[in-house]
Image 1 (cartoon, rainbow, N blue to C red):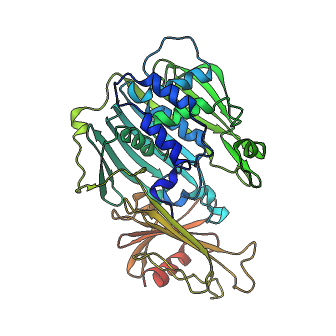
Image 2 (image 1 turned 135 degrees about the vertical axis):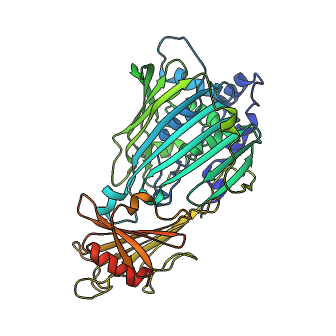
Image 3 (image 1 turned 180 degrees about the horizontal axis):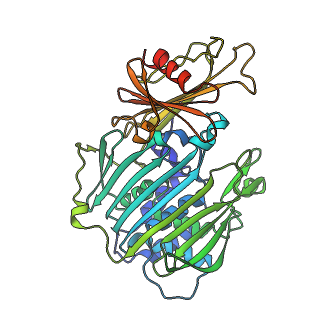
Length: 478
């Protein structure tokens, strides 16, 4: 189980950084930069995680967090000639107290299949798409509207607003809202980063650490300026960073030893607005899909529209969620995740309270599939709990063959019911439920239904749509 403070590997160093951070408009940015530069490099940074259950076990590389954090904190106008990477990223030390108001729409897409799902489902279930609408005035006055488009089972709308004294965050799929006090002041910056898809440290601090680490032989990280390009009609400085992920072999007891035993993977490019310092585009390259160093594929973040000079309106900051927010204190992270997984126990699928312990389907000969794995997870803040299981054709004695049939089942708690995208298939009566089925372009068949506040998506390679509807009628909603 992940706790609030487990996001930060070196909490002592982090606490020292946070204590050094100035309040807005105190004129202490130079002292902050000096202290951050003099501090020892952290031994290890935990990679940020995407905030949806099916990819909760897949880490997004550090550079992705840097790019997203850069986007959220523009550094103010500048008129220099094109900058080298260290100078461009050094602006981050000023980020917390010198934000240029702006409004932007951006989209994040990434292919990050769930490790627990059959590999054949990766093309249909492994891609995520999120759209962000950001309205930023300063560190404590902003609004972010988030729409998750894919995966379909996780489609969701969220609204988060910082009004100067508190941050209110509403999640439609579970109809829950929480409210955090903006104290200390950097909580607003931290939540901005979280809302854009990365659980990273407060952004001014995280980026200042990166200034220290880029082109640093102690970390083996490098960066270079590639010149300027035009993005959305604006001049953008292009910076390449590499590697964006490292894998260490064997045990090591010092940073130098770990670096010597490590292999770096992947590159990233950042297109940074030359006038205001906002990242307009971030893209990853050369990440392995399998084995050591494996990471998300086709990671692309791009701003699709942006305007500077105005942030959120008073009406936008006055947003109130449809439910009463739960008042919470900020304890190092806004969301606490939990997860578990297991192989076949021979006792059937064990699910969290309130979920559906669906039984196995049967093959064409009437022989039941075998449960070969299951898991559960979610977050205790918004109640976005989930469960999943894999059934294979074959017996516990022989095991599933390389060409055997499978049924992969996902369950997600959603008070808003089955997402509209999963109602686009053929409608079937399924016991006490109504099910919808369809066939993906690659030939895999799917079924979706809702029972109470639990939405179900099942994908199979051998069972056709009719067989899936029969399974749902007998094993899910009898």
